[in-house]
Image (cartoon, rainbow, N blue to C red; front, side, top):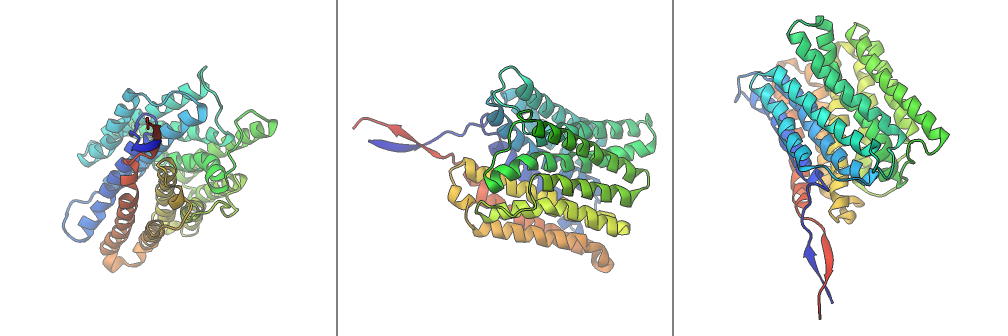
Length: 395
C-alpha cells in the first residue's frame, strides 16, 4: 500500500518560500510609517524610507523569489546556491534598514550588490553550457531593468559625492524606483501572462526568426523605457510619461495581455487587471502632471504592488499543491484585491484632501496593510507546508 508523508521544504529549489514572506514583512514596514505618522504616533517624517523600502526592497524580494525559482526550472539548471540565497537574504532587507538608519548611500550600494547577485545567477544559468533551454524573448527586458537599477544606484551615490551633475542623481532615483520594475513587469509578464493566464508557454528565444525579431523589438522597448525617464528628468515630464505608457501598452499587447484570461481563477484576473494598471497610472500621471506623484500610485500600488502579490499567490498555490484555490474564487484573493484597489484610489486622491492629507495617507496605508495581511494569512502557511508525496511501504 502507499501512505503520504509531508515533503520537506527545499529552499534552494523553491526560494520563493523564503523571499515572498520577506517581501510581505518589508512592505508592511514600509507602509506602517504612514499609519504611525498620520495618526501622530510617529513624529519623524520618513518619506524616503517609504519609497526606498517599497520600490527597492519589498519589490526586489518578490522579484528574487520569482527569478530564483523560475530560472532554474526554465533552464533545467542547478538551483540557487546557499551563498546566493544567503547574500540576498541579507542584502535585500539591508537596503531598507540602511535607509531607515539614515545611511542612504549604503542602502544604494546594498541594492546594487543584490542586483549583481541576481544578474550573475541568471546569466550563468541562461548562458552556461549546462542550460537545457533558452529564455523567452520577453526576458530581454529583464537585464535592461537590472542594469538600470545598478546604474541608478551608482548615479545616486556619485551625486551624493558631487561626482556627477545633480540631474544625473535625480535620474538615478527614477531608474532605481521606476525603471527597474517597469522593465521587470513587462519582461517577466510577457512570459508569465502566456503561461499562467492562457496555459501557453512562450517559445525559447532564437527558435524562430519571429521570436528573434520580437526580442529585438522588446529590447528597443526597454531602451525606450530608459529614454522616457531621461526625457522626464530633463523637463519633458508629459512626453516621458506618455512614451512609457505607450511602450508598456505595446509590450503588453504583444504578449496578448489585452485578452481576458482563458484559464480559470479570480487571482488570474487580478494579475491581468494589475498589469494594465501600469500604463493607466502612467497615462493619468501625464494628464495630471502637476499631481504626478499621487497618480503614479495607480501604477505603484495597482500595478507593481498588486501584481507582485497576485503573481506570488499564483506561484505559491501552484507549487504547494493548492491548484483548486489557484483556479477558483477564494474569498481571500477577492479581499486582498479589493483592499489594494481601495488603497490605490485613496492614495491617488490624497492631494485632493489637503485638510486631512496625512490622515488620508494613513487610511490608504491601512487598506494596503490589511490587504497584505489577508494575503499573508492565506498564503504564508502554505509556503511552509510542502505538498505531500506518495511513498510506498511494505504491506
